Amino acid sequence: MIIYGTRASNIGNFEVSDSKCSYCNEGDTQRVSVFGRYFHIFWIPIFPIGKKAVAECTHCKRTIEQKEFSPQLKNQYQEIKKNAKRPFWHWLGIGLVGLFIALVLIAGLTAEKDPRKELLDRDESSMDFLPTMESDSISYKIKQVFDSFATDEINPSDFKYRTRIRDNKALILVQIPKLRNVEKEGRTEALEMIKIVTDSQKDLENKELYIGIKGLVTMMIVKTPTYEDNSKLAQTDKLYDFYGPKPMKEK
Image (cartoon, rainbow, N blue to C red):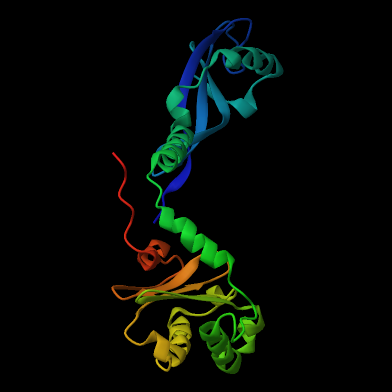
């Protein structure tokens, strides 16, 4: 359960002159306390959302809220609240978010990039709506299976395909833009349809299969000889091994 809401803390107290208490009619007795309001999550201040005030008569101790201020006291409050400065921790949440974003950006800039990602990106960008027997026979056969068995709700005509064979490995990529609309259990049927083809292909015998099924944006199904994931954000880097071991960083 997320606990959130608004809270306030005192950020200034001011003696107000030329203001009479409406209860005891004593003059120069008003003390105005200003409170800074902020939004919090789990009591951690996220960002400020305004100020409010109360006034107390130092003579009779009568306390009134801001909405009960006399016109004269309201005018004086508008002047003194400028001097009520918020403490830095009222912006603590915004600061933490900014720090997190900065750390993520720094980590991204300094992280060692795997050159195999570019190879996979290149293969993804070369996926085709209409593979042919001459250009990509395996993808052509996989498309035939999907066209025959996939439901019209996910528009098989929108699917894209790409297959590559490299030494003793094969990479099979399929993009199904509406895959996110399919339940997790139903998404496994996509693997079964690909298996119909791979099990019957002689040129795939004894080869390690690296299968990636992509939704509209992210890879949602990844299957390799040592890994399998069916989620809304499968680990794409598991497909990198198709391209060989990660190059050693030069010292």
